[in-house]
Amino acid sequence: MAKLSLGSTFSIFHSRHIRPPLAGCHVTKMTVADHHPSLEVVGGARDRFLPSLHTNLRLPYNPLPLIAWNRHVETIFASFFRSTPQVRLRRECLRVKDGGSVALDWISGDHRRLPPDSPVLILLPGLTGGSQDSYVRHMLTKANGKGWRVVVFNSRGCGESPVTTPQFYSASFLGDTYEVVKHVGARYPEANLYAVGWSLGANILVRYLGKESHACPLSGAVSLCNPFNLVIADEDFHKGFNNVYDKALARALCKIFKKHALLFEDMGGEFNIPLAANAKSVRDFDEGLTRVSFGFKSVDDYYSNSSSCDSIKHVKRPLLCIQAENDPIAPSRAIPWEDIEENPNCMLIVTPKGGHLGWVAGAEAPLGAPWTDPVVMDFLEYLERGASKTGKFLGDSEAVQRSSGELHHIEV
Image 1 (tube, one colour):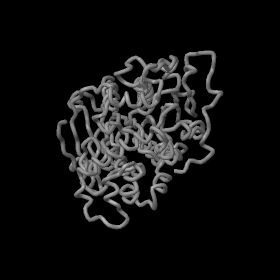
Image 2 (cartoon, rainbow, N blue to C red):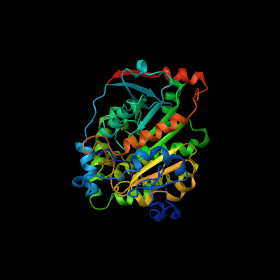
Image 3 (cartoon, rainbow, N blue to C red):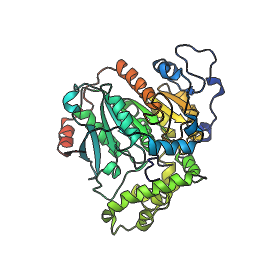
Image 4 (tube, rainbow, N blue to C red):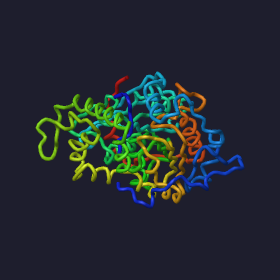
């Protein structure tokens, strides 16, 4: 099960945000701008964004019955049996301010093939995920096939990204995201920047959008399988079959940790290195290492201050959120329905099935791209058609030179 790349589960979710899907969303009379009743579509930007998605959303959501009858079957099937497109990547290792490193994987040859103003899409995978994962590869090839420049942001230790300091990444830490977006914007100053995040990557992306607010250099973003409320997600993570995912992710985290264990030798204070190294659950790993690294009093304190649900109200860039009603890792009861409805920049699509990172439906099911990919691309291309060229995101030429001087290139 270690192959699963699921979102780290885990701010106190205000009771006003918890609500069932809106009964009044579905309409019986179909028009060009409407969606099929099998889908839940809400949000302050619904009327603005929905017409651009009608090609896909007017069709019923029809998952494969043999796979989608059970949310766990769909989740596991997608993780183990979905095809993985073969792509030659060029790796760029970016050293960040604190001495840590992240890996940026670009499609090899795009720097020569694509014009400098081609839109750039930054991909943020889920917990322990990276450019090797099938759902990431499908999105990468789908966007690149439409002329987009795509880069996968592999967080510290993920996707064989180097770990150069005794610190991994977390749901709370946005520092690397700031630096990656600035670097990419500096490298392609004539292009508009966009981002797509899955699971933990979606949580980090939405938090980044909220923190940057009006100053955000992204022209738009998509959040998929976002746990939103990490306290609620953590509660569900320890129920029934979900324990299988918990153990699988703990093993994946331990595997990454043990590759770099020497960096963590002789760390004192509140660190519990043996607990992290032998974690039986994600919570164990976060108790032994993550919450201490990032200055939280407890795991619950970490989870309650690292969620994206309260960031939605501050998002000032176009944001599409897609969730599955039956997601075992990102429960639908954690979706901040009210804030999404009230934000004129946000739209939410909820599918009746899909599991976690599954969505085995659509034209390419069961082994091809998930149902979400063409929806995501329709949304992003709609934004790009309406966007003006932004120019340089980093006005500081010194910052550009600093970033360029700290990069190393390899082919993977």
